Length: 350
Image (cartoon, rainbow, N blue to C red; front, top):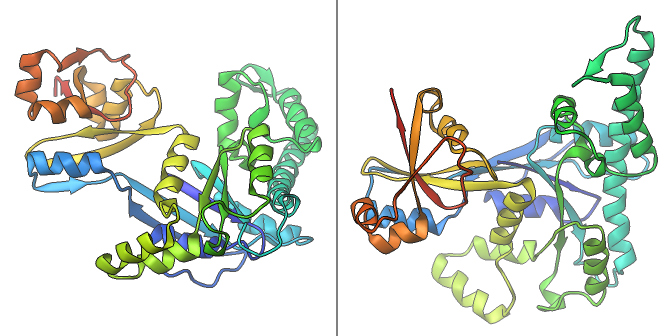
């Protein structure tokens, strides 16, 4: 799971990166990016580890990429910075909600500026492609559709200041276009970076911003990045004392990761045993045969069936043997869509 952080100047993006990754951010230029991977906190893994007492416990991984801030009027450097985000699973646009006196219009302006820079970056790529297509002597197709027709449609969408993700395209065409790594094809959510001085209700203009984002169908996470980062650096016993004193929803890191998974359309399934308890990440609705391939290619190639039980029911039973006795451990064929929190045991001929 890869998440890219995008933001205008002074939005607190690097502070958020430091909170999420528990690392120290380094100086960034348009040619550089900071990337850090961490375990995804998951109480299901914790409880199954307590139940099975395995030799190893492996959490799902999530990585965060922090790029140079986007600056007004600096297209060349903005493009360089955005190039680091071409292969992300989702993008988080960070908005400054902590500076006193900021209005909802100010915050929306920051959001729209970041979106416009991504749109322009994609448009330049599309225009270069159209130039190459004009020089070709023969018509080329993409998933059975003339490429020129597709890219003219992409150009018209971007020229209207609209994200490519809103376009209605066939599944085959959309799949082919993934290789171009367009930024505005990627799922996105907004992050409002708050100050504790605003209290739990946030700035006066926050409701207007929330309504505006809801009308755009863009999810929003609210986070006190600086405060949470400072608290994260305290010893655990002191951290809880200070958290209770602030009386704020200081769960921004967990909320961010949860929203990143939801926006990217990803879920986690689990495997258990005496050797290992592990969380694995797949696309929502992934057929169980494909999920088996995430564990090992041979399990997909020689797939027979999957034994499946939900995490909650396994915990209630206390063992797979008891789950089987109660009839809660069921056999599923290769088409079964894996659900978040499924515990899988894959049976294969190899």
